[in-house]
Length: 316
Image 1: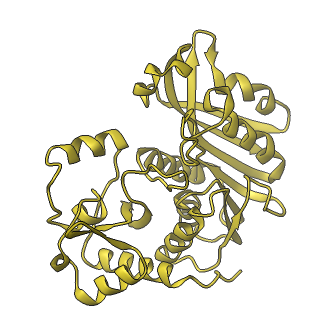
Image 2 (image 1 turned 45 degrees about the horizontal axis):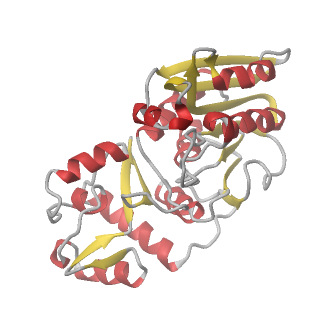
């Protein structure tokens, strides 16, 4: 399946990503709280390096980028004026040998596309699971793909695959996913706008998903997991995703689970769905305590902690 033609702005992002790789760019994107703390050490500091510009989202002088590249980035809105300086509207993160573009810090808009510590854990989970369970080849669906990192990591780990489909309800995510697929050298993928599996036809040998899992007052797409203390989307992915699996197919879910005195809210919601004949299920707590600052909010008054969890379901 041919990759759709990219827009001029997307083409500029591909060019920039390749240029950054040629210049040995490397940046591990941290949580927003850590990002804020690091930048607050020198709140008026100008960028001095490529990581300052495209990682830490700091303002920069024109002479830090080649003139021909900067002219193109300004033309396509990748770089904008920030007082007497300039600022990138995107960030680039590196993961293994790949480079991925996503929204600049701070990710405050409703359609922001996020990449951070959860992405790194998700990618590691995908690679571990593929080595253990998923045969070479087959069709892949990354549902709620965001930057597309999950589907891209899966496609590269499987080496040979028949179809890669990346979906997102946020139309602003699909341009990033197209760019990142191109930067990874993946030319046969489809990028579909819609709610979870709604735009997808047929079954898959591998479904991967890293849905948001917090209750976000601003209802930002990358952060808000819906009702049931943010577990609604993850539950829907299991309910709608398991029927999409081909025989032997695997669903890999990485998300967060609020833990209260009555137990794991997510597991209580999905246990009866996955513990049944014809399915093999593995549910693992990866990190016992993430986003602890959220517990100060009234909506989490009954929650003792939020855990990062993984669910791997295989159709036998």
